[in-house]
Image (cartoon, rainbow, N blue to C red; front, side, top):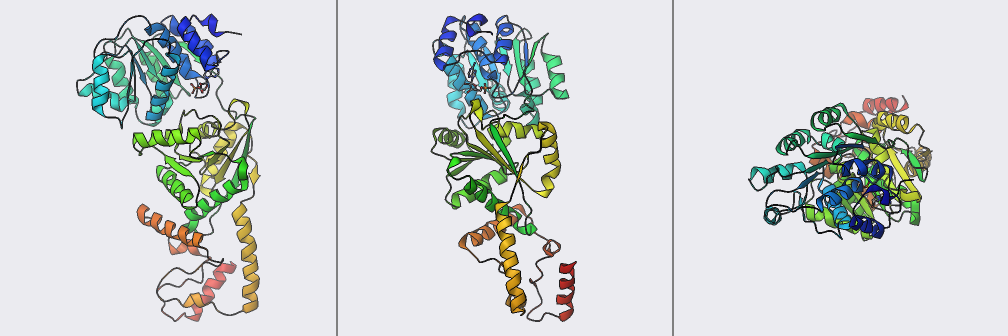
Length: 476
Ligand code: AMP
């Protein structure tokens, strides 16, 4: 088996690795470090969690230990798709270069240009940046990329998803033709293949097993969910999330809750908070300082639930996550593997619970095809409970056999729900109305077929034939 000491890394880097507690290189490290140290281009097909960050930072630190940076001309450049990833790469540099004198700057949105300019002006060995921010600095004439000897593109497939490929091509064009390129992507989409063919020169290609399989240490569950009414879908789904969390009890020490949409990330976090859960959102629209603060809070345990979008959470290295909740089935099947891979790390046990609505079933098929197994279904704890209470209520209704008061409401207001009202339900309804307003969405009467007691605009009079036709529809 390859040892770190076989890899020709500098003694100071080896010391830092030892201090980090790493014993043996991971496959991507064993494969990428030797050619990178020889100055060759590397194409690493690997994802987060494989140790790929060290596979480019360690040889870079070794190579950059010789020589000095000139003002405004960084000697190396690492491009990352998100601010968090860039910050994480910067942390890795700090850890592995602690015995070496290297200067670095982090160019990400949300941090003042002034501070970043000052660092670049002094000259940096390593510049870690998101593409947009890097180009902003370049266009302001504060940065020259002609001194870049090593360029890293990290998480290229995510760059593609985020529409950064034109920026990446432009940045490649601004760096010297003689640079060394270390290029990493979890998958090789045709567009990524094209970029590597254009900008990499005879790269050493290292592919570590694609993570189509999920770790054996993760227990997976799937909870099917169908809203009782379309206009209640969101609030009922949030209620289901709470019930699923509660069902886990203390075993759920912390969790990442993934949503497909940024708005849902915010709403889920807000709703959890309202119900007394210690939850915070993380997504691309939050200020950088807030994102860092939330991440740190989640890492050190002061925040228990992190509601996240795929982009924000991609590549985040957060050890000890007991649970992952998939609030939606992800649109890309591979994201399911990424998402649930946040738990059950390093041989620990983890649990991943996903909610699936009827509209998600196509995505679910794709996930199950990818992981080549069926995710065990579990009962929906709420719908089970509601079925019981509905059947109880039906029995009572039959006994009473009298028309309901609510049918005569003339003000067009919502009919009170059948189940006993609670503050929480009212809160959720309010939430729901707010959501509808903010999304401009409205539920159409047609979706409320079962809600045959609600009469809007009929005044106090309900003609017999209308009640009859509704009844028939219900039976049908
Ligand atoms: P990455 O894929 O770069 O996000 O790394 C995932 C995690 O693996 C990080 O927490 C690293 O600190 C850790 N790691 C990287 N290389 C090694 C190694 N050789 N042995 C043990 N852990 C490692």
